[in-house]
Image (cartoon, rainbow, N blue to C red; front, side, top):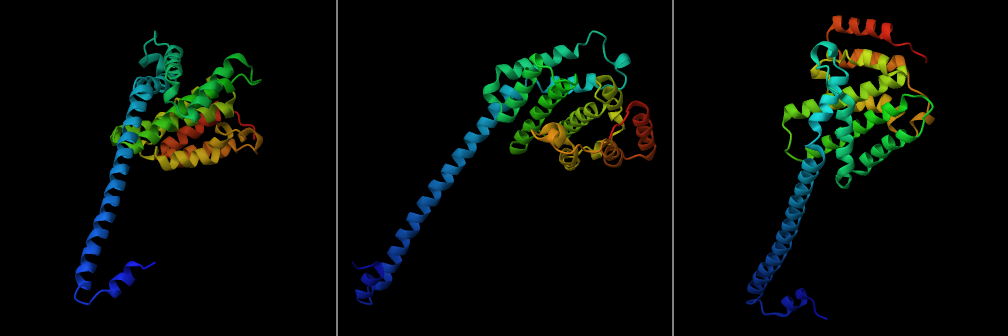
Length: 266
């Protein structure tokens, strides 16, 4: 069977340039059509993915993001008794968040669903500690914010200011959960996390969050966290001082708060 090259070689020299030119044009048009179809397909998939992410945001996150931030702020407010209205019920706010997610689980990731059912389970089973159920509740909110962060990074839904607020609240939640794990007492943990205003806003970054999560978060955020050697409580508290607090006087203040409120068992 003759190839195209054999056919061209068999032709008189006068016809070869025209055939080569026409063949190249046909081949170019064919390749161009394939590339155009591929790019069109990719663009369609991108549009569909963007539409899907927007639907997830507006159905799952948009109705409750204010409530999540409000819950964190109310529970950990430094001057709660003075600045927060006495009729505010943070438990009702949490229930609103939880119930909304339950009604929209079809839009939730497997990670959020697992965190959701961990909270469900804590309602009917005793963990033996009395405080792990609260950590489950905090991790449920943290997983929501983590997935929201991934979503907004893939879209243009959030501007820089909103991204910074999201990042700060992720750090507040992880810090709160780890303090609760160290203290094993809700009141003691809150007595320390309410000084989160000492954290410098410029240091509440994704880099520091990832570092904190990698070094200390594994203990409460992974399946095998409790099976591994426990992290150093002193190391974590020193991490907060060294990495999240900028002013020296604030560093000293947090150290005093730590020594006053937290009894450490290494």
